[in-house]
Image 1 (cartoon, rainbow over the protein chains, first blue to last red):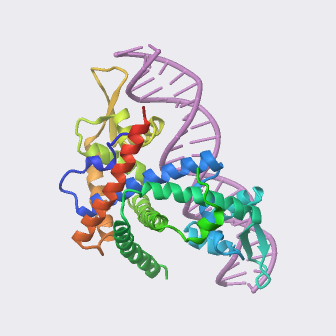
Image 2 (cartoon, rainbow over the protein chains, first blue to last red):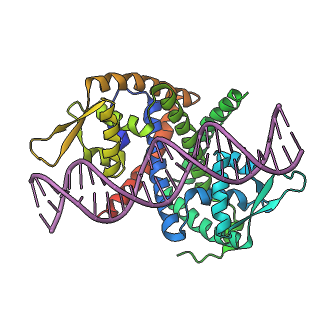
Image 3 (cartoon, rainbow over the protein chains, first blue to last red):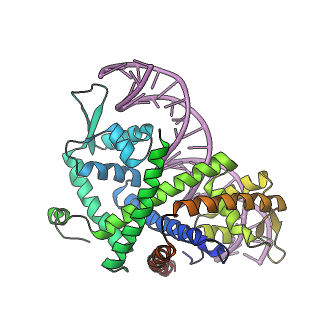
Length: 162
Length: 162
DNA sequence: TATTGTTATACTCTATAACTATA
DNA sequence: TATAGTTATAGAGTATAACAATA
């Protein structure tokens, strides 16, 4: 790909925040595209399905549809659709919730867990490779500063909900 | 490929790069969703159309379809489609390129320029608001560190093109 | 009545590939 | 032959709204 990109149009006169945002957006798009390609070519899956499985990975008993929806920040209908696909692939299963007969929990099958582990290792490698130019202190700094922005945005949207 | 056994790898916890990536992705998604909502509600447009107009803003004579494609990092068919929409709204226009009768240049119409200015002001405000919690030196640091990663990724993908 | 999850639908964004008209 | 742009199509991702079952 060429080095001309979204940022090119910016010269002077734009606030620092805007330059920062465009850099953030460009970088995220670059990495995300890479990940999608890798996931499709090597595991015939998508980022959304991978993310759903990642949510389930450390919760052996599974998560409710509503939990998945909240954690993945997408609406319920989408979680149903993604779950249907993964059920068809026998990678996750829906189980009843005794306390609430409306709800269902979704959890990885043994096969799904195994499959996810293989994907996760590759995924980590791709990510490590992407950020490989940074030293640990730079990564820490980045993580912390991004955290400040993220937490403020989350606070704000929570306040707007009522 | 990786021959480290699955369990060993999983027990060591997630690398710093992965935590960093998830934070970057979440934050970008939060801001992007916000922007899309604002652009739809207040200007009845999309981020892709906004981006296309932003590319044209500082190039009064316009850009070729191929330039737009490269700068926006999307394939040509998409640029044609986005341009069609903006032409229908009378915000951009296609003009002939005398030196090459296959090519066309796309440029903002006077109306498009005026409309874009209004959007750009609001857009900047939303972005400034999003990053408002950071002080200038933090923004600088962020910008620089992100730049290192971005430029490395771009170099890498450029090398892969031939 | 409110909530959990499902179904149905529609739109945006994107890639791929076949096509045309020039070069 | 190669390039610029278009057309057609498909799939991912998402939101909205109406709905059924249960609380």
